[in-house]
Image 1 (cartoon, one colour):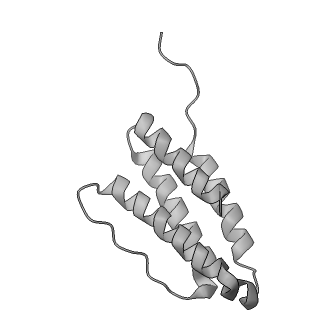
Image 2 (cartoon, one colour; image 1 turned 135 degrees about the horizontal axis):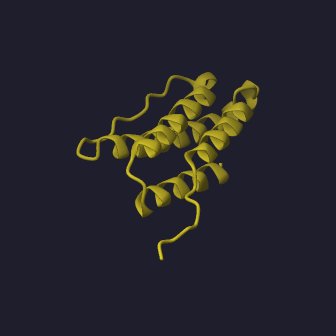
Image 3 (cartoon, rainbow, N blue to C red; image 1 turned 60 degrees about the vertical axis):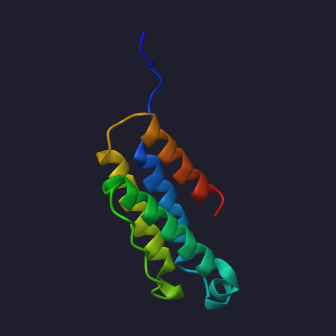
Length: 110
């Protein structure tokens, strides 16, 4: 009998990304300078890298540019939503489930 467990949905990733981005966007410059911007850029770059590898596994991923501390919330949002889109477009299976779980863990530990 096939496994009837519902698959996790990329919608969960979209919601988590929105929560993080909405939390980062209004931060004052002092908080961004204390490391939030650098951590956010690292997170956005990793989400972007994962999305690119899903979409084009044979091409090396391009690094998300550092466009400054004031846009890092938007970079997290764009990269995270790109990854959710790539997960929706990928064939369902254990690999995409693991990728979604890994992305959610990255967001959880931010």
